[in-house]
Image (cartoon, rainbow, N blue to C red; front, side, top):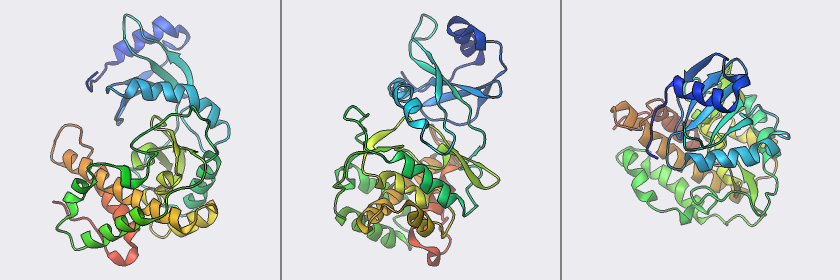
Length: 302
């Protein structure tokens, strides 16, 4: 299925067909989303509708695993409470989930330093050994050296004075020893549009579609992607389980995710399909935090 947009009339019809007790609650579209289009349903629920080719499979993963994981997680998550099945009205699965209150961090960044402890507690609870049938994700649960096409991701910053320093961080991550521990549960996609913020504080984690099992460094990159400057060290102190090699790999993942945010954000700024203009400044802010406060403001648009 190509990326599409749905109207509230379709969502209302699906609710009447499969979950009539919810069908008359107030329904309104929520701005944002990538693989799924979201509608708020009443005060406490939301409907997630798949709109990309891979989205139905991601929703099935959330439906299968998130209710089980959420019981041990200390931050609110969009736990599926009802499942929509394919029908004549709509040929794919869809979900009714718990609404997580807050503003996405690409629009309202985390500014409260205490969020370092909140994020460390959340990831400490999530990063437990995963079962053998946990979802696989070839873009998240692999060593950085196995990813393809990465060289082109550096193109947006190639002329910037900090480009060499960013590459140094990346090369150090590639040279770090691989994860030797068990495959741990991962969120897999911790970036500013996938967490919510209230009064500057991390208030919830959303969109678990990329959840998988692997090296915790993938998620630990959030220390630089999500938290304010200077918060990475307190975060790792609170997390307690990351050795130097894991931190190096995590910084590499942060670089990679930052470059992706910049590319998608630039497309949004230029009005190109699939672009998200709020992601570009989030990407540059991530690079600045990765390189340290002495790097100066990185915000050059190319």
